[in-house]
Length: 521
Image 1 (cartoon, helix red, strand yellow):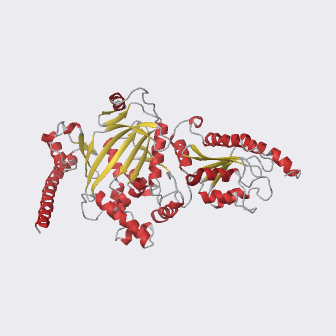
Image 2 (cartoon, rainbow, N blue to C red; image 1 turned 90 degrees about the vertical axis):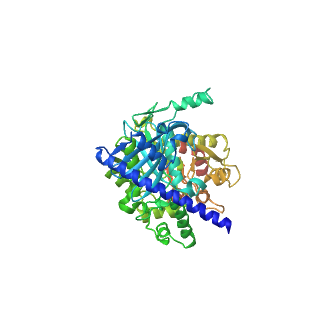
């Protein structure tokens, strides 16, 4: 009983301390709101050291200057966003040497952490990464609501982490740099620090890069902002959103609910970000206002509400679709995002990461086409590898010369070629070499894959079963049983197809066509 009383006293004391701080926050909020009202600008950056010190002590960081070894004013900024009434507390930024998630390209990120105290909502926590220049020209924006299952556990039921990864990949491609080769330790850190500077509250890169990016991760918006509660200022939106979101998808699985029904199962409105006049969708604009970025935004987004709110906040928004990667495990949620929430360009169709990266990089490069990453050049590069296999490995006379490579994340994961006297085709050999990694990959083959016209599994059947997202081929099989039907079979299975290097493809099988027409095979 004594132990229980101890816990009760400790909990009660902690709550009393919290309530005391909440009263201080109310008083400080009144003061800074009055100052913002008297100021003509949208964002008031606090210069009053005494008031700023009190805010740092009673709001997010909860730090006392007398205990700190450095001047806290040199580490934090405090501001008020007049249109929303939000109090903003953020660090002054730190510079990071970064590598892209798949292709390991080097780039520099300026990292700023934000706590936003938003009336009628609560405390939103947001992490921002700036890559390149976001001030003097249009820049690319990705605003990502947190998704713990995807980011932490690699869940494929949604495409959230794939979207985030492909944006970082593209940002790295358009802002790639070479670090000093011999520098290490302190020397390397000194080099990193020089890559960004803070001037007049602007985070300026040493090198502008080809396109600026601002990546915004809304940590407290798990489950589409599930933490929102009408009429309450929620101090820990992250906690409430997280624990609600876990139950949302438990309800989806245990009770056979859709995404929207997962919310209503808990008594919540689907997509709580749209509550209180779309308040959860205003966060991007609040942070852009604070950072004083360019008003011209290339928004990597499928959500109409995000786009609409940013335009209402005075930004010139050009929307660019962003899918990341979608595989069969995510078909259900992708379809529901479109049908229940109106998200654009997303459906139960496979999307490959490699192709999405190429498309996004081309869309954002802002340079003449000859300097852009060219899909045709990319595809020709891998098709030439397939031709090389066909010419050097496939020493066959009883079937056409065929070479196949399977590519994922910019690397070959499977190779194949025809084998004399067997039913093993190049595509099947490559799929066996790739194994489970073939899911979501692109297959390059010199000849149209065969169909189920024989007494053994066809290449098309194996390609569909493996989860290949795209097939690039060089020639249509001239055999009347197959001619064009292989491509139609793949397309009917929602696999994208494309023909490249057709002249070379037809040249490769010319000898076999001659032998076949003479009845020699």
